Length: 426
Image (cartoon, rainbow, N blue to C red; front, top):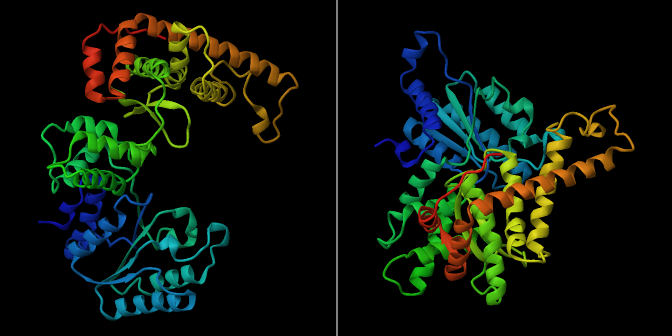
């Protein structure tokens, strides 16, 4: 079994790492074609994505003596540690020097990139260049590293580690659940659609919290309710003891969120992972939807933002809730960006004040305000049109939200299948 088999997904990155391992083990094959081993490999990206795990798999697969450099000492001692690690690697070559979290070596940035720690690393790399010493490093924020350090000749291979793809995330979820007792009633598709993630570590934490909750309640296995509870608490900061609204207010919130849900699903089928009447974060406003994939057009995002207000206006005489206000602010920002940055309606409303030596006429703001109001009115009318043509979907979704409080991906799909969806072209 390869050490890389422990890494789920990231096939392109694993291929690059395996290629370098092959060069280390079969150098003569590459030398016959004039190829040399790259000078250094840097894995960079957000925390929790598995960069250190990838580096350790690489080291294990290479099977060489490795010297790990990690910031765990004071300034002077740490600089000596860096120098000593490279010296030992040269003395025991072929060897590897692993610089873990290299951006933490010094509290500097590119504007102050002459920190002695980075100078020591550069000197060590240069001194070991012809000594059969390979350098692999990880970093979260590559912008903190001096250009002179990460340039070609010191790090020829620089690989950005991104969030796992949707398919990889599904496989990671299944892997983390493989050692847990999970109820057969758990819908894995529902689970993957409800979780938004920024790292593998975050996925693991959410699933572990669900197991903790199930064990505390002395359940025989982890149920969907435990997983949903964990997602709401860990990702949306929605506490279990939130203040519930009155029945009448719940109906209104449900209608508002159903408006967002319906317009989103009509424009981009399968894009809503779940919808809930719970509060989110520090917001005092109840209700939100989770999109499991991004909308393909900014116009769609504007329509979805206005859909809650549109739904309320179809059924209520007064619409003045905080939810509508937040939605309007989001929609306004997107419309302004379209007009002033992207020139969607021509160049007359481009914001030239942000361009060097540019200018904005005195009438610019007045014309922009008028254009924004006009655009918002048009999008609100279109959102209402979508809802009216899918009224049954809207009302069934609102009723289901009142009844269940949270609708999963499968719930939304069943409601859709019980109605006739009318697509509205923009």
